[in-house]
Amino acid sequence: MKFVAFNGSPSGTESATNRIMTAFLDGASRAGAETEIYQLAEYEIQQCKGCFTCWFQTPGRCVFHDDMEQLLRAYMSADVVCFGSPVFSWNMTALLKNFVDRLIPLKSPIVTQHKGNFDMEDTAKREQKYVAISNCGFPGENNFSVIQAAFSCCQPCLEIYRNCGKLLRSKQEAVQGIVLQYLSVVEQAGYELASEGYVCDETKQNLSMPLLSTPEYLRFLGME
Image 1 (cartoon, rainbow, N blue to C red):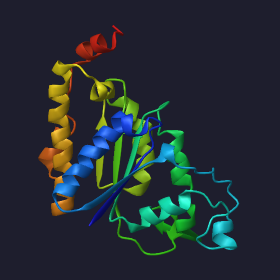
Image 2 (spheres, one colour; image 1 turned 90 degrees about the horizontal axis):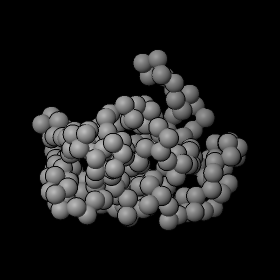
Image 3 (cartoon, rainbow, N blue to C red; image 1 turned 45 degrees about the horizontal axis):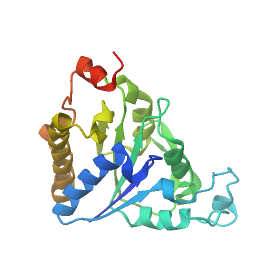
Image 4 (spheres, rainbow, N blue to C red; image 1 turned 120 degrees about the vertical axis):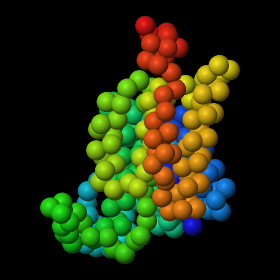
């Protein structure tokens, strides 16, 4: 089994998103899965211009010959695809959205319908599972509503939404204890998905564990 993750944070390896994704992949690796992570900020990815050449003139091939060719191969090689992004202005980052837009060569100009929802048919049958990972610097869950709606399009088998995300990069010893406890749960989720094919309800519930109360977090940010 192969897990491939795409991190849409501009901060790349230094991001809170990457810390969550790395813990998740560590768990999958512990269960025997092959894992890869791509920091999208490190790749040249042109913006899709909606020409549909990849559908009607050169099926499956984009007019742009950039790093997306490598990323598409990685994407197609995965049994589990992990999308990661911090919340920027209520939604995924431009880096991840641009990457998702450039997945269009994997679709064909044939309309499909499932339970009243319309989509384009895949060029090749795939049995991939999807995982959505996001963090937000604010407390509460309401800040994930837009990105959660966007991720719902791929029907993820697991969603990890981490509020109070600024804590994940804190160097404070008192904070690191609870962060490491949380990341151990994330690692367990990766292990379970790789070994069992699903994540148990208890682990899913623990993924939403509070890191700090809202008043404590606001004091941590200096934003009371």
